[in-house]
Amino acid sequence: EVVGVGTAHDEDEIVFITSDAQLLHFPASAVRPQGRSAGGMAGIRLAEGARVVHVGVVRAGQVEDAVVATVAASSDALPGTVPGSAKVTPLAVYPGKGRGTAGVRVQRFLRGEDALYAAAVAPRVVRAVGSGGQPVDLPPLDERRDASGTTLSAPVAGLG
Image 1: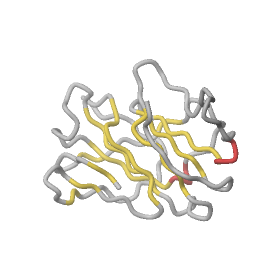
Image 2: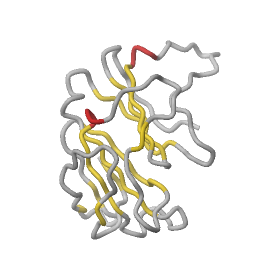
Image 3: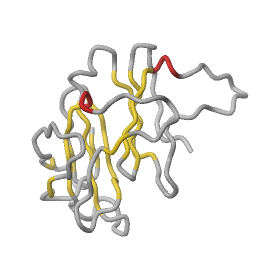
Image 4: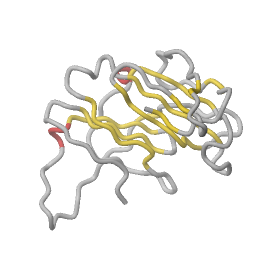
């Protein structure tokens, strides 16, 4: 299953975020070029039942300013139907790890939450939108790597 596509130079960082709140980033130079008949390469090691919710490329020179936004809720709820909680954190607080590893926890779940349903990495600011196209306010930047999110006022349909 294709979960993300992008172009990257060797100096850029590739970022994976999973539904079980794991974040992994590594240099694009760690990715070997693949031909048409290749079997692919390992990006992030997933725990049983987890899936990738975001793959992104952060350009060289933008890693120090990049931010990560995550939105958590119950996996029993339809995505975008409950507000859940969100967290916005600088990418720089997450240590880089090798390709094919499990990553580090990006958000601690609140009571009733057990999955991330949305995530994004952006150069400086991440914005959220509701299902009707209205803006949804995200919490202020949180420098803590492994903190829980802040309860949102409305469900998030997309981040970017």
